Length: 59
Image (spheres, rainbow, N blue to C red):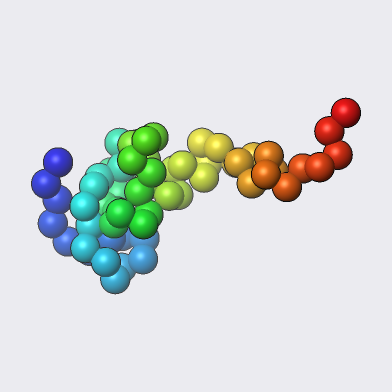
């Protein structure tokens, strides 16, 4: 998809994609291509993502 403008998250890089959830224009750094979501929506969709990597107390 062709988009024009700056990334609406960092406001410094050219936007290359539009979030399928909220429509935010996002640069390659702030767009999760695999999910089709901007970094903000991806974080909301997977809030425990960081916990998986740091959780060492599993039983």
